[in-house]
Image (cartoon, rainbow, N blue to C red; front, side, top):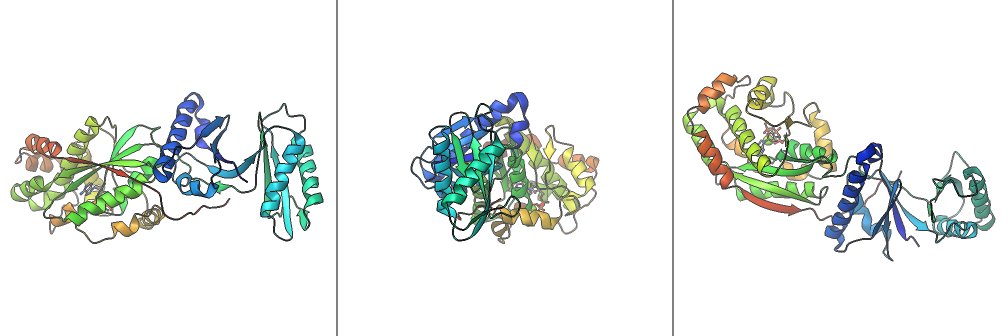
Length: 402
Ligand code: ATP
Ligand code: MG
């Protein structure tokens, strides 16, 4: 019977002095995600280089979905822990594990890791002893160092050994919350949820800002954004969505500003409002799904003109990606099917016939002078709705064996 899941982390291990903060964050994230998903708080222990999740009589599989959605985990294995470093007990535990999974003729090898250098037997010697014990007790086994069906792993730690045969890939990345906070401009499209997910992957706590033009855009369009946020929240436990009413601003732009300048002006105002919300939330960067050359607002000139109003970094994780790469990621994180639902976006409703692909900053400034920007922005921020979306993971129990 498995009693632990051994959790490994890769990149965090490189973080020198900050390692402790990263690790504490990762453990907190594991604890909170499992609490959201399974409605209890698991026991977690930590030892140099490893995190141990205690099963306390539960099946390991129930934790897999949660672990598959937590950034910072490189891999994990259901494991049996011995109660001591007694050789006979280690042999018996290894035999139990093998008996559980061997069916018919099987090639295997034994790999021993020995972070505890006090342990009297060296790894190669230990490998031989364990392999011989398996061969003696299980018929049909054949030892083969290179072509093996089963890699029997033993970790000789300080107070006990862990025995396991299966490892599953984690997501990699850094634990969410270890790189500060940012807001992602979340449209209903394909790119921005992917951008938000990539920000999370690098440890950013992501909050979403969405601009809606109700009643020009529908209730469904708003719900679509919340559904996207819920998919993202599976990777960070929860996402706060700031729903900004953008109708008045768009009406004013449509009324006062030149047709072909609408998009850069809209975008410049979005950036200003997002910054205001980011400041309130103590966030330090804005993420977008911009992708160079994809549409009129994403030429170098447009990005330049839009960027001019920013005082915070605007980070664009998808900027150089192929559309197909973005779609692949959107499918992986399960946002694609939601993104392609046909509800209008605030931008499509007001989209001009002939948008400028090379808007000039001076022209933007001249057009914006026709609006009472400070008041429009203040009003939109004040009427922004804040919704917390949780990402409970209840779907497929899938894991990728490595
Ligand atoms: P996406 O697939 O993310 O919608 P897109 O390729 O459709 O991107 P645009 O519509 O030009 O490109 O939008 C560029 C970026 O501007 C989006 O990725 C998003 O970050 C932001 N954005 C656009 N519309 C909105 C909106 N209504 N609310 C919040 N952010 C938006
Ligand atoms: Mg879009």
